[in-house]
Length: 322
Ligand SMILES: [Zn+2]
Image (cartoon, rainbow, N blue to C red; front, top):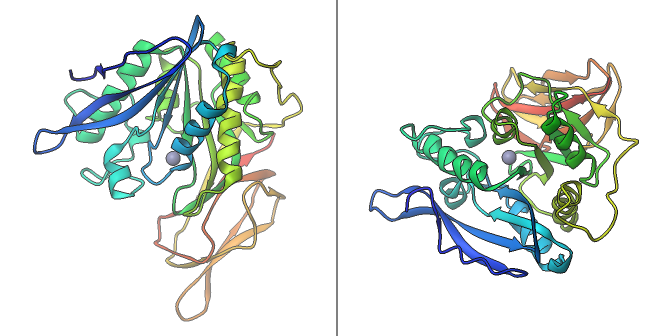
């Protein structure tokens, strides 16, 4: 059964339930994820939607539930396969990383069949997705530590799958888009899909250790938008974010000092050159590090305000506007 979808009796026009085996616990029981499959009345493209690559990012599964409840299957031409927990180990422990090997699952795709537990999970997840689907939507949030604005990341290298990736992102329902530079986030599911010649988009909304209704609604819009861009959902014309200013690079600010992170800005903020985005105060009350914006950008993610940080922790993700 390894790597196979279990009991996936899909019925046309309905949502079927199954699970995907991703590994084994020491007692031999299955490390598996629930799977929901929406199959339309007519055949068509297949979209793979996955959530909880990082265990604390629960906006993804909630958005999938809401999407599947709201969508009219009569308007579906094709199939939407939803993997609810790409990283069941991190979800159970409520951690971003896999507790057993400390790996970030979104840096080990396409995985290895003989690798660490995270690499094996990535391998099984990716093999199944690649075999079954034409495109990927990867649902994320800032989790417990970071807080993200609603944005979409993709890679358009000029290839046909790159063009479709951009179309999916432009249909996500946000003006905040970034065409990733070639070397960023290698080992992500998005990169692995792109390398295999299939379109992919990564969606972020919310975080900071909570999920809001608007975060869920944002990701519902992004799933529906991807389905429209692929010709899977035929309920209304595609709504391209034609006026979006697409970011061309993504910079990650990292703390070089330890202390408490303080900020007055929120994700989605348009920052100007020289603007201070926050600072670290030590336990004597002295400001020991300031974070300043060096190019025109918008704030994709920022560390939860007043959170203690280690030197080396990510503080913010800035999308550089050309
Ligand atoms: Zn994530």
